[in-house]
Length: 112
Image (tube, rainbow, N blue to C red; front, side, top):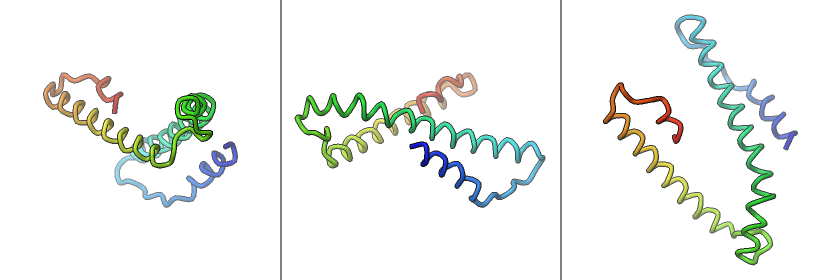
């Protein structure tokens, strides 16, 4: 896992960087945003994988009676269901923001 994290962050420097037009702050802000997003994604994956192996798989093993927990087809089905739920939450948040207009709080963006 550590090796994959190191290789990921080494590889991010290899991407083509297109400098945005505008002030130097614009370049700094856009670059910082993408770097933070990459770090957040990697930290979330680094935290989730051991939790999945230590907590979720043994629980599913006891419920399903299979050593690996759930089958690949069941994993695909769960992934599809989660993407449908994610889209439904995004629709609800966008509808709420359009209804509230400028009075909407930033906290409504957290579920997305």
